[in-house]
Length: 256
Image 1 (cartoon, rainbow, N blue to C red):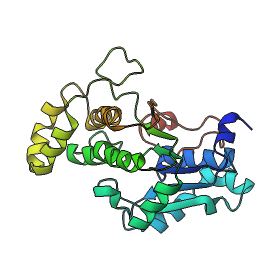
Image 2: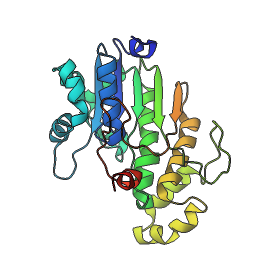
Image 3: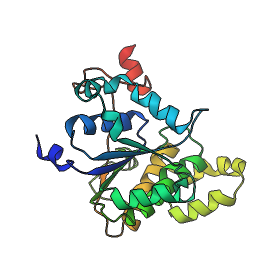
Image 4: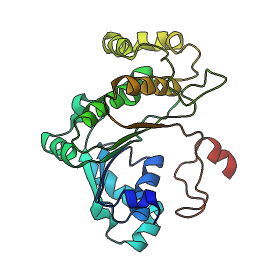
């Protein structure tokens, strides 16, 4: 067993965005490569007429879990769904669930985000930036937290020709933007969005840049890592070659 796999023995992990493409891969890899992980909490909201329980049940039917299902048929028992909504104050988590997370979680992986390039600015801000801020507030209260891992994007700083492993000044002051979109009419926000974005090509990269800055400013004493993946395609080898759950972007081109 590698030192990374061994590290998670007995650990409790919290993952946001677990029902998404990157999130499912992370959950599967964690459960398969570190079978002694104690528990994996996942934040899930009801969506498209499905309850939290239905969404989790559908997620676990996914083919990506076939290999871990074969090795450990009861793997689902370690997955503990928490009803939550990143766009709501305190993440809309119940007091009982919050207490459980604050007591037990050792590592947080923040994968949840809207990845739509044409997402209206207000919603992109609420989920990608304000949601990150609210999760940080929760994480700072966790009694046994060892690391907070934020999934950003290689394109958060795409306005620069050279990008180093540093946090750059944000395109705007996040708190002022939060206030702005809170009281402005949606149609006005839409009209001024191009001016606000400036050199950023879309609301996705713009809000991801804001999120990185927010984390730097509000991390407190947390151990933070920011991951900047580029375009993600189908799996090369694990859990089996060629797995993907979306035909968006380059994957659609490859298949065509």
